[in-house]
Image 1 (cartoon, rainbow, N blue to C red):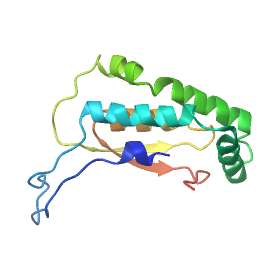
Image 2 (image 1 turned 90 degrees about the vertical axis):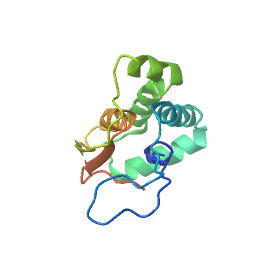
Image 3 (image 1 turned 45 degrees about the vertical axis):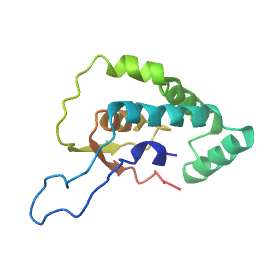
Image 4 (image 1 turned 30 degrees about the vertical axis):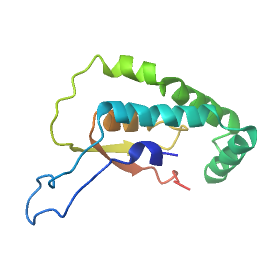
Length: 142
């Protein structure tokens, strides 16, 4: 599910040795492209068919029996509500995103509530940085 939003577009040649400079011709996603990716994810979540939703909640419940379908559904609805192009543009419009090199941002993702770390993921990726996440031992990316 996160592949839509977490992929940065890179068009690179080889990196010179012993340097952190961007390769010639590399390009990172613009804010508008990142917003579009999250908007697509929101549409995918909102458009889940009943059988797709049931399959997803069954997988989640198999990994963590505390995550009952009702809680997973509420979490997905809450996330999908904010994954709307206009809402994301309004939210990000309040901030300046300087054109600097992306930083690696670390986040420890708790595993006690469905999608509890999604806001951290959203903030880091929308700001143009790279997320380095430590998932809970209870989390599974199946």
